[in-house]
Amino acid sequence: MKSRNSRLVLLILTCALLAAITVAGVLLEEKALETDLSRCNEAPSAAFLFGTDWLGRDMFCRTLCGLSLSIRTGALTAAVSASVAFVLGTAAAILGRGVDAVLSWLTDLVMGIPHILLIVLISLACGRGFWGVILGVSLSHWPSLARLVRGEVLQLRQAPYFRVAEKLGVSRLEAVRRHILPHILPQVWTGLLLQFPHAILHEASVTFLGFGLSPEQPAIGVILSESMRSLTTGRWWLALFPGLALAVVVLLFSALGGVVSVSGLGRGEGSPAPVS
Amino acid sequence: MSHRLKFAGKKLVRIALLLLGVSLAAFLLMSASPLDPLQTNIGQTALGSMRPEQVEKLRAYWGADTPPVQRYLGWLSAALRGDFGVSLLYRQPVTQVVGQRLCSSLGLLVFSWVLSGALGFTLGVLSGAFQGRWPDKIIRGYCLLISSTPAFWLALLLMMVFSVWLGWFPIGFQAPVGVDAASVSLTSRLYHAVLPAAALSVTGAANIALHTREKMVEVMGSDYVLFARARGESLGLIVWRHGIRNVALPAVTLQFGSVGELIGGSVLVEQAFSYPGLGQAAVSAGLGSDMPLLLGITLLTSALVFLGNLTADLLYGAVDPRIRRGAARR
Image (cartoon, rainbow over all chains, first blue to last red; front, side, top):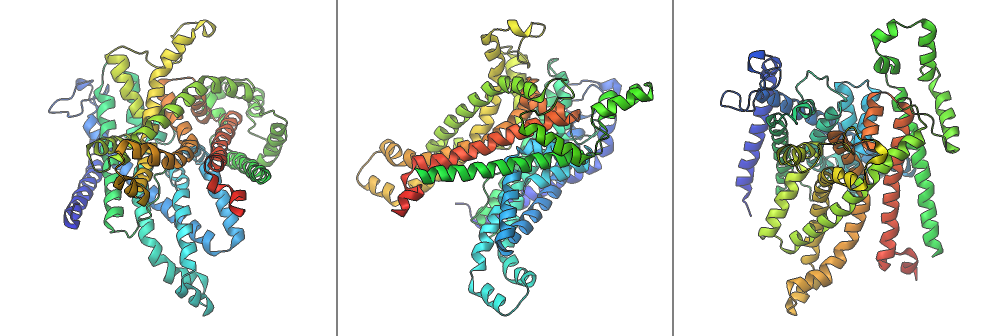
């Protein structure tokens, strides 16, 4: 068993690395768009760690930029979907049978459509832009966490202090804020962290399919779908490094979620099952 | 028996309602789209050079001027009679397009489903049985790595290694380029499906293995396994007698519940391999604002997901007598 301290160090290092990637990507944005036809299609070297593409763009900068975008969209979508899950899960547990039935039907509905298709549909509804992807990913990832929250709140409802509060005439909203929110919040945090990897992967997938970001924007999905064209010509570095970098970032986030949910920094034993 | 039929009947009604909801949701989302189907498919320059009557005719063809409510009701009443409309991109009935695409996808899907289930189950049981030792560490590392990898990138990687570098397998598509579709042999088709199936199975197995491992660890920590150990049973026998039987049930449920994930993965993998299946059709329908086709595919895939879940629920009762409600009442 690792001690709590070494976990904390690991946690801080991971966070620092991810933050560094995010900031570096934002700073390098202009450099990533720079084209230079005198250095097209160069294999990885000391000057260009990840090589260059057919317009002579530095793939290392582009990858960092894409990762930064992935992390930022991941943060936004995970936050939105965790809030949606919290609100709907609590509402289903508190507001009585009718609301519960409707919400559980809605949960089944969202879970029934394969995620990718749902994201495609939502992104179409938003006119296939950046916000389409954000909304698509955030509105398709809440069901499993919402179920978890609903179960927890149903249990908390039976607790004596909640029933006393009800009998004393405390309004429902106030009772939830005072007696349920503090118990549920750690779980929602853990759920949010665990949703991060999925959100990032889905964002990359949807942009890979061609929904969402415009082709000149350096997102990992866009970079990889561009690399498909030069696969047969043996320019392996265009596909290998950006994908590998994405996998590493996702792994770091999974590790982060794992550390937090195991070490009891978030209280939750009941971390939600991995969602697709 | 009758209560189980009743249970299945209730579930079927729920599925029908859910499918209605799916169609409505998909329809609303698509009609909320600000994208003009004429602009995306014909292009501004071509539109500019057309006479107004022609543009008007095209507008009517793509259904751009009928109000959404009327369109949905029209679509629904036709769909209930089995007519899902005509695909705007392929100019064929949706049922026909979907049928064709499903045929070429189905083999891929079923094969990957079975393989990922078997692989995931085996790895999960092994990993759980050897909890904390090196087989467990290797398997867990593998699963974490794979589940952090986007499926389409894995597909690209496989293509890079096995098609471009080693030259063992063809690069994408379902058949050799330039050969008449009718004259493609079955072996050639299978040959083209190997890499996509491998990409799908490898990604699918990781999730199942992790879940199975968790259950297996739970079983291995139970009192009856402790007692079996005290009796001197070997690890192999314990896994065979106590482990697999108790883990099989959640694994089966998980396997039937993973249909949606598999279909989602197939969309990506098919796109990466240019494999002309259902997933690729969904992507082109989405990119080309082909509403009837996208609606048809969404409905079909959701129906598959719901049926997978229903099968899991029914199997639960069949496999484990304790869960049958009638038996519990007696």
